[in-house]
Image (cartoon, rainbow, N blue to C red; front, side, top):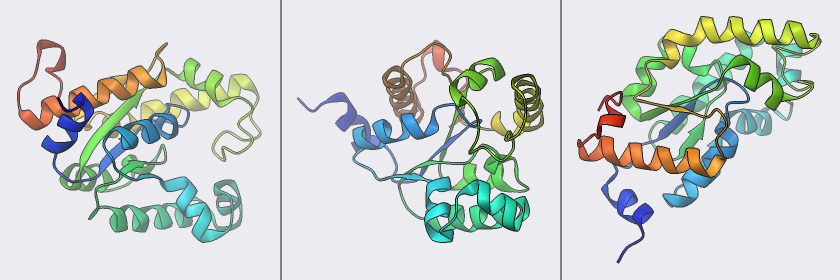
Length: 197
């Protein structure tokens, strides 16, 4: 008998799986597990941008500004849209003009949810996070809450939303696999009524 993940892999369309959510939501941790289960490549857009730019994201923000970073990010997303990778997107990627619609058209969008307080704990000192760098812990929490509120409508366009609070990376990846397979098959359980296919 084929392993469950292999059955899922065989029934899914070969389109990108876009992982979206705030910094610290777990995209870069969940993504490799998901990709491995589906025999796909994992891509972290921030890592790819850094590789091409030969600068850290924080350095790009400092030297070129956020707009230049978003331009690089948008081009990379367009380049990846024709493949079938599992892609971890930067926290603000889906909130850029036209991005939510483009991601929804070209792949399966999965939103990893976490509260601002959980994100703050996961992110640590935030020294490499340009949108939080230099803020005291109270300021970081306020900034995370603001960013979550600003991006909420974009995140909520995702076909699948998975709560990551107090859950292991493995449990989150397994739920995503189940939800993707249910969406593909078009047979949703009561717990999966929020999936739009």
